[in-house]
Amino acid sequence: MKRFENLIGGEKCPAASGKWLRSLDPYRNEDWCEIPDSDEVDVDRAVEAARDAFQSDAWRSLTPTARGALLRRVGDLIAENAERLAELEVRDNGKLLSEMLAQLKYIPQWYYYFGGLADKIEGGVLPIDKADHFVYTNWEPLGVIAAITAWNSPLLLLTWKLAPGLAAGNTFVIKPSEFASASTLAFADLFEEAGFPAGVVNVLTGTGRGAGQRLVSHPDVAKVAFTGSEATGRAISSSAGANLKHATLELGGKSANIVFADADLQAAAAGVASGIFAATGQTCMAGSRLLVQREVYEEFLQAICTIAEGIKLGNPVDPDTQMGPVANAPHYQKVLGMISQAMDDGAELAYGGNPHTDASGGLFIQPTVFRDVSNESRLAQEEIFGPVLAVIPFDTEEDAIAIANGTPFGLAAGVWTTNMSRTFRISQKLKSGTVWVNTYRALSYIAPFGGMKASGLGRESGQEMIKSYMQTKTVWINNSTEAVTNPFIMRLS
Ligand code: NAD
Image 1: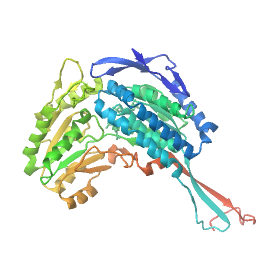
Image 2: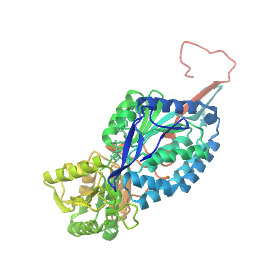
Image 3: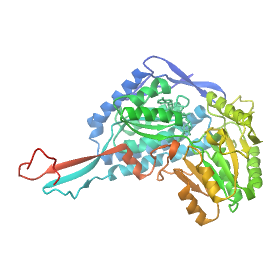
């Protein structure tokens, strides 16, 4: 069985304990590789390597312009290795090769963008209100960043942290999900190939309890940049708060796609399907609630069920496949459990609801549609992270806004309408970090992404983001030749 090793301080190494975890290929439903089962010993070594690199001349003496050049070089290397990395991701999480390859080909843009930004973060000279003082600010990196990621898009989620964090001058210890670590371990090698000093980018694998907990509470970690579930996000937020660390949290969602009767219904149906069935529904931004205005409710529901019925499930590397398997065995059981819970709670199935079996033995679940769902039900309130759509009718724009905002989450929302004034009104009232109008699942390195409410804290991508990996320093220089007037009171004038 293929083995991947940790990268700590420039050295490839197994876990100090010699233990390994197995990783499943969800399409074949068989283990295909082993990754180190790291523990506190490995975490401590990796943080030490990152801390030493942060303090080293090799890293500190690089100008921001030189760091930017390294980021652009690594972007080129990612583009050159896109096929190989995408294939590893697909093997580990079962998502479509077409989707993972598209991600890998786009990922370099984050390194080019933040590489370009590295030498454009300027401090300022302050027009200070005290005579004979020269006061300036500058932006400094935070130190060692712990990046902890989920299994659904390992390299994209990591890139949202690494590109701005490295551009800002930090060093990293990365812990990918134990369910899909292979691509991250292979990806990390590209940083030294690009010329980053050893120890600037370190990766160790392991479980949340084994390696993750120690990493987020390690005294030498300055910031935790996390993507994952709400429950883990809350635990990490508590730990980061108790240990006074910076934290950004990209968590789950229960996003609403809102279809008004005046929408282009054909375009809306395609957008709604992409929101919930693409990636087998395993995306944080899944449009897992569909709100349809009552005049077109039956017609639109029928259109969605027809799309669901026609979806081709199969081998994720086959270009004709539209939906791959669920990424891992515990998650497969969880999604099926939530479907049967919804049925026990009285939800009405309009399509699907069962495992899908084929000769591969893969972890397939049918695209599933529930109709006339109550927004108060668990089906409408809890993230499933699978291909399960809850359809809810509404009458007025105000109803739609109330239903859309009526969950603990606030990651994204889709609005389908041809009424432009409604577009502006509703975008202001939706409590979500992103609003897509007449589109869905669009992303860019230029556009901030992140959640309101229980969907997270902070944003990723976009210019401002780089400052969440930095802190200001204020420097006061007294040019006066006179002695301090009164040493026993604060200098206020
Ligand atoms: P998860 O919370 O189970 O695990 C995420 C990561 O946290 C893994 O690396 C895991 O090992 C680690 N971890 C678990 N417990 C930990 C602990 N106590 N301390 C430190 N680390 C710990 O999430 P998952 O199942 O891997 O991912 C699915 C979730 O991620 C969904 O809720 C999804 O919505 C969310 N997600 C959010 C975004 C976003 O940008 N908002 C993107 C993708 C996925």
